[in-house]
Length: 326
Image 1 (cartoon, helix red, strand yellow):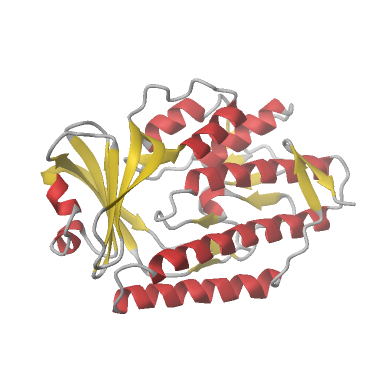
Image 2 (spheres, rainbow, N blue to C red; image 1 turned 30 degrees about the vertical axis):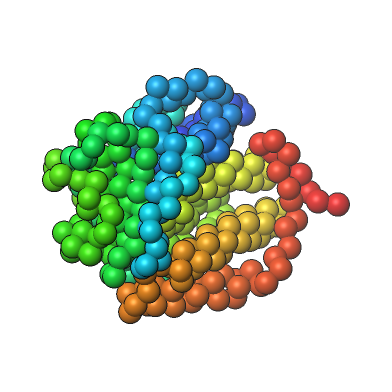
């Protein structure tokens, strides 16, 4: 049984189905992200896992990221290869055909979206909220995305055509942050409409697996959009979750598998927090930024308390399967 219908759920359903397992899907209802920026590395991972080498060949392409991060920095153009796709379009291309959920007992349940089992507790490290709104672009040039830090947060502008794009504002609503923008505000002519908001702070469940179940994807953890690696992380978590279940079914020690799974995911989450700390420490600066850096450091200490400074990994992935380390 797979609970959820995001990228992680799609990947789990695909991999378990490919391995010959009977898969049922319990869908979740949640708002979709209007736009996702998939780097070429993340896109390559999606194509490899799903065996779809031509996936999103015609999607709008980003070739440059313009960065204004330090408060006194001039716009810095950097090469960046990625595509722009909506979450709905991504999932329509990835979600395989499965049976509908039934009351029949399942050998395993994979939680790929909330709600979590009662044993799991969520921990969030930060208080930031992200807002999205579709906007008109000024010059219609296309091919570039923009990121800028301001006094109480940061802005990210992603074009989805020559005339329009999506603005992500983290820390405060767009109007509040655009008033301090030196660069991104100049790329826009006004709001087109649509949008919403969602929590943008990293979070993780303190129990990621238990007898007969595992959490992966957004049920296991969520990432700050500043790193742009949430889709790739979700797929890697799904690969590992499926490998753990297959190894357990083949007779491997379940408790050792669970400890490996917890350690791997927590270590990955700690790396994400460390990367976020680099970004937030070097941003605009000020009370808002200092508060978010402190929360990220709390998260890193929490991870260290869970797995230590040098976690021991008992297994390694060979393709899509786990093998015990010698």
